[in-house]
Length: 236
Length: 262
Image (tube, rainbow over all chains, first blue to last red; front, side, top):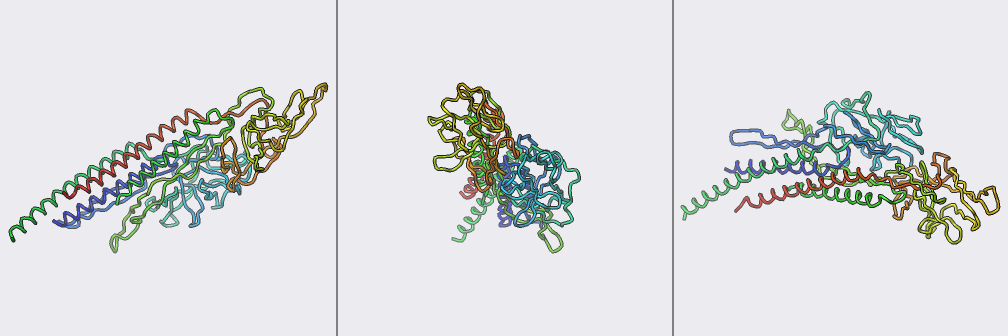
């Protein structure tokens, strides 16, 4: 009986985690370059009386819709790959291509981190009309002065979301390779790949599962209470 | 406990900021020299409940981890400095910058502010001032007896005096540009102020060092795209709605928990 309660508790806990993941996807429905997380409940039968319940999350790297903007400093990757950004903790990866030129004349992301070009060096553009060209070249007043570095990974399960639109690679360093001929599009941004209809359906599903487990749990505990009362009554 | 309530709340707050920004853009549809603003968001931090590759037993590891994100937050309200359309006014002191650059305005406090709004007037002293009365920098003063004023594309201001056929140059309008114009902070009244993010202003004659050229008798209209803003507004409203659904589901789940024991 107590095993049943514990399993039911784990099952409830798992649905809560799923709802947390869906809520985060929905909150980021308007975040440029956001990739949804896909939560899954895994049930593993350990023995006849024990079931282990786990939740795993995977990043769903399906491309988001590309929309045109009239800004020449916007870029989107039409296909696989990530932009490189320099942070205090090392190189991080991002799909957010909403760039700016900072006061020092370097190409940066909206949160001030520098974007890296070929050779992992920051891209200095200086004054002038900056444009991200299709293919990833950066031009100033029509002259190409650098190229955005775009990389991809051999196993995206080792791509850890750090938040703040950054990803960290926690796999083997040899798993990072440059994308040959990256399909970078200038004056475009990649929308979030969250589809609110799909998330709503998954949210309803998780809620109904939660509901049925909690009904079961309630009937189990009611039954136990009855037995307990009967035993106590027999002792009196 | 459920993070979903707080997570969905960050989503709703983000969409409120989005709607506020869109409403301000739409309100400024007729503001001379107005540049539309776009609210941008980033995902908040993630909780690593179990990183990928953690050992599940002595010989196996979990192939995937469990990461739960905590919502979204605004990262920037970026101004789009794309050129607005020109409107012909035939007023000699209506100026438009075609290309990069800002008019320099001296505020009563002595600070210099920057604007794309080129609708200028002459005050009682003959100085060229904005509609609010703040003088253009460097100061241009137009003699009372001047018959007409001509502003060249390079910023040269010349006037024709009564009884003379040749025009006399009386000054030069200089404009300024910034390394990062998106870093300028808007103070309202069509004025922008420099910040550490924008860098220092570099002033010069129009047409030099990448600065735009002046056109007399035109005004730059707002660059807000009404259709685009309306579409963004619908998207923002629906995103708000869907986040409020997540709040309701989280609430229902907590209610179920409360009903476990009767």
